[in-house]
Structure formats: structure tokens, C-alpha cells
Length: 322
Image: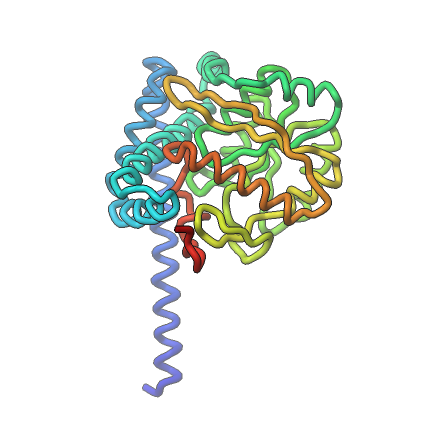
């Protein structure tokens, strides 16, 4: 067999292996969802209050089985936070517990109405008066969120208070297609689905929502898959953060209002922070928002989802602070 034929054969074999791996991962995610769905229904038969401790247990199990991933993450956290390895491991384990609990609760939100209403009522939002005034003004705003806790439940809690809330999202690989959007509609939130295939359509939906005076909740604490957006050093790593939402906010004249997680036990507690106006330079605005998010993560690293793919896959910037 000549070299060219051998190369083609190896490429075909590699492609077949990658296809099999993707298929197996998809099956595993599906089985994981079914397990979470069944567990959530069993938990609700006892009480909706049992969701939090059971979800935290799933997080502990997730942490336990991801041996290689958690070791690498703990090393990266120690560098990013300039802390000891033991401190990083403790924060990382709690991060798994907090954020896997959030996923478990989101799965359970597509259940009986009394349980859903009780979950929404349990989420405390301090400083919500600021958002009420913003909504009454008829002008939209971007609610700046992060992968910290149950932002979907927080958005539903705002909607339950009569505020017009929309959530920008992409389909989660942890949930079946369409499930997250269905959950949002069930709790009174307008889902704004953004796809890589049709980014213009998603942008138009966001702009319309802002111009209608809605509070649009968006997560910005991650890098783009492609090297697009604004390059920033975020928690020590060089990432490209999306600037599309900043440009849309500028068009609509909408401020950014951070909504920050303050506590996770026994209930979620969020704090509405001081707003940030969008300036003439979108890149400067992105960097300002990135710094605000980084400050919040450094203050409470145990709440941030360090194991999300959009930070851990990046290398550290060449120069690290002393």
C-alpha cells in the first residue's frame, strides 16, 4: 500500500472512531438526562425541598468520576485564583455541587404547577426594585448573568413578579432539544434561541425584545468557539468574548444590569447590582463587563461553573500576574 492510500485509510478510520465517540457521548448524555428526570420525579413525590440535596449529591458524584478533568481544573484554578491546591479543590467540589444541583432543578421545572410555583417563590432577589423601575420606564435592559447557580429559576422568579423577562440561550447538550425552551415558557419567560447556523435571526429577536422594554438575561462569562469577538484575559486565560449583545444593547439604548449570585443554601439568593452603561467603544464595554464578572468569580469561586467548556479549554495567557 502506497503512502497516499495509507493516509486516506487512516483518515477514514479516524473519522469512524470520532463518529463512534460522538454517538456514544450522545447516548450517555441521553441516559444521564433520563436518570435525572426519573430522580427528579421521585424527589418531587417527597417534597420539592428534596431537589437541592439530591442535586448536590449528583454534583458530588460528577466530581468524583471526573478524575482527570477535576485535577486539571484544580491546577488551573490554583493559578487563576493564586491560591493553594487544597483551596482550589474545595471550591471546585462545591462548584460541581452548586451547578449540577441547578441542572437537576431545571429538569424538575417541567413538573407539577404547585412544585414549580414553590420553587420560584423560594428564589430571593435583592434589589429587585431597580428592575421594577426599569420595566416601568418602558426601556429594555440586559441582565448580565454568569454560569453561577440557577439563572433560569431566577429569571422565572422575576417573571412571577410580573416583570417582562426573556432569556438568551443555546441548546444545552445536557438536555434534549427543545426542553430548555419549554421549561422557560412554562415559568413565564420568553426564550430567545440563538444558533450558530442563524446568528442574525437570534440577534433580531434580542433587539426586538429590548426595544419592547423587556429585561433580557444573557450569559457572557465564556469564550466563543471561534476566535471571534473581543480578546480579553479572563481569569488568566486569553479568550474571545462575544460583543454582539453589547452592540445590540447600544442600538436599543439599554444598560447592562448585573444579577449576581450571593448564596446557594438553603435557597438561591441573587443581588441586582449597579448598572453599566454602554459606551461608544463596544470593545471597552466588553472588557469592563469581563472585569466585573471576573471580580464576582474571584469573590465567590465556589459558585462558578469552572467545568464548563468555554474556559477550561483555553491556555493561560503568556504573562501571568505575580
